[in-house]
Length: 308
Ligand SMILES: CC(C)(COP(=O)(O)OP(=O)(O)OC[C@H]1O[C@@H](n2cnc3c(N)ncnc32)[C@H](O)[C@@H]1OP(=O)(O)O)[C@@H](O)C(=O)NCCC(=O)NCCS
Image (cartoon, rainbow, N blue to C red):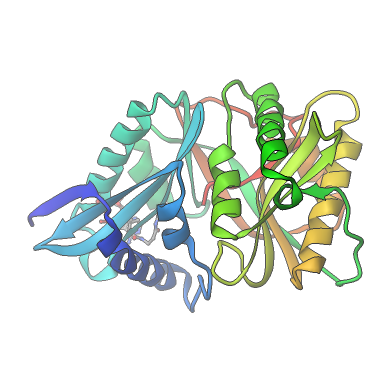
């Protein structure tokens, strides 16, 4: 089989999206990605790369990559089901790790099915090793929750840059070089949701990058915390609770019925706090790291993300 892997270009995005939906619907059943828009929004984002595999000129699969400063992850990876088992996925992952290494990302990873040894073995060949579970959790939104914290979308552009730098200082304090400015820009530039901040304006104590509704990574009826973190140190627990309450307020304002997020269970304090706050696991996945190091998955780190 003649497989060619090259960067995904705009005309191929619709086909990549179709393959992505078909591949995941085949393993998970149903219309799992509903009215979300993951491939299209990530393709447009400033901090991502997208690779496509072609067989006989037809797009047969894709791999998306996100760069968070010194951290980068691979996903989603998908191949058209009728061509599974022909080496297309392996070619995409081989090309993907070249991109991750080229970015100089010291901490690399992915999220995959916790119960699939085939997936684990597949990625292990490329140096990714399974570590702790990442729990995709949610809790209901009643609609009456108060609006708390403040929103980056409401800040005047000159003030916004300083606030975004403040967010980068929060993540850098957790893991040197961790920087999700690309996720912040994607949300604001594409109107995917908003960024909630808590603490002092000049030095935010914490922030959350949230997607809301259809046409985003959330989907209708959902508010999804793509990434959230609070500065470590004394008071991190109450600050994390305040940040979650602010996300809940945003979800209510957006008319969402559920607030969804992901947390690696190695961040034990955060995981326990989420359980105590009424979140329950909907999807247990596992993160695989390259190299096999904890990164920012430490017991006291109050950080919410998943690498789907
Ligand atoms: C996982 C996936 C991308 C693999 O793509 P592929 O082109 O079939 O992969 P390859 O042909 O390169 O196979 C490489 C290895 O993947 C594994 N594999 C093959 N088919 C697989 C399947 N249906 N499910 C899981 N793993 C599979 C095998 O370990 C295979 O190793 P082998 O050479 O010893 O058989 C593809 O099955 C897919 O799109 N699945 C649905 C979406 C998904 O699971 N994405 C990854 C989530 S992290």
